[in-house]
Amino acid sequence: MTDPAATSTTARPTQPGEPTQPTQPGLPGLLGAHHAAYTVPDLDQAVAFFTAVIGGEEVYRAGPVEDQEGDWMARHLGVHPRATAEVAVVRLPDGLELELFEYRAPGQRRVLPANSDWGGHHLALRVADVDAAAGHLRALGVLVLGEPQTIGPGHPVAGTRWVYFLAPWGMQLELYAPPAP
Image 1 (cartoon, one colour):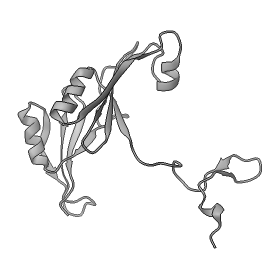
Image 2: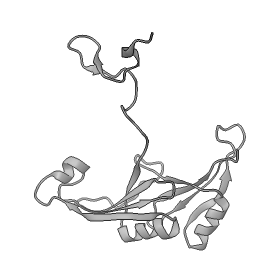
Image 3: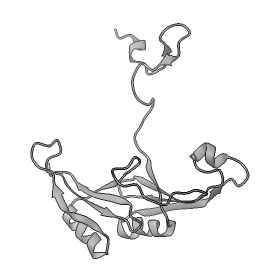
Image 4: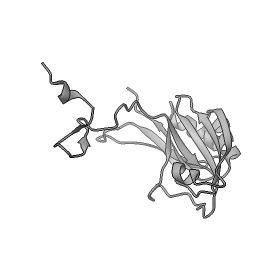
C-alpha cells in the first residue's frame, strides 16, 4: 500500500512551527502555457503583422488600461502608476495567444533588448518548411537574418531547421521545423 502523504502535492510542515514545504517540485496544478505577451511600439502595426504576415487571428482589443489616480498599474503590472496601455490578443493556428501591449508611460525605455541581453527573447514559430516560410517572409519585405540552418549530427535535436527574422519594429522571431520522423 502506498502512503498517501508520500504522493500528495499538498504542502505540509517539515517540523512543528516551520514553514510548509511542497512534497513535489513544481507549480501545483500547472496545465501548460496559455499565452506570451510582448510590448510593441505600435499596436495596429503589430496586429497587422501577426495577422496578415504570420497568419494569426485577432481575438480582441481592450483599453485604455489605466489608473490615473491610484497605483493599480504599479501593483498589478509592475509599471509606472500613470502608465496607460492598449491591448490586443492574436491567436496563432496552434492556439497560442499573443497578448500585445502598447504602453505610454513616464520614463519608458524604447529600446528592444538584444537576444543576449537580460530579458532578451524571441518567439519561435513551428512551420512545416523553413525554406518556404523564409521565402514568403522575404517576398513580403520582412528581414530574414541569414539563410536557414540545419542542426548537425550529434546534437539532441539534429536535423532541426531554423532561421531568425525580425518584425518591422525589430522584435526577433524564429522559424523552426523539427526533423522529419
